Length: 127
Image: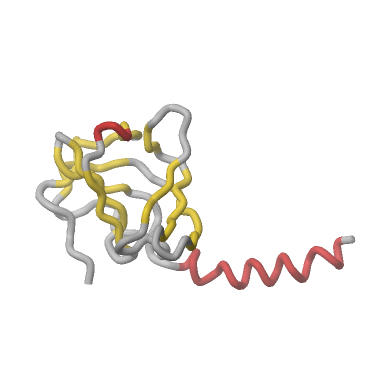
């Protein structure tokens, strides 16, 4: 039994290694306000979102822009939708978000959210 499971498991780990080796965004942004952090953001408070593989996930609320401190997610990209599933209508540290393209109807996988950190100004532009 173990001989049948081990080779596919090793292959899966080898394929996942590049994604796991990707560097996460810096823990603190130069424009971050250290005192303004939150474990969750209410979905009803989010007015717009910006996602990119290079810069991560940003959400705008009435209190300004917030950066998610979760690990880098190569699936983030322009014109992609983040699907959240929560029974409390919030986006919290540890929640999974599915990255989806509405036009092609392709799911690009899921990523785990980190805490939220308020930033001064607008999020950086994608390259």
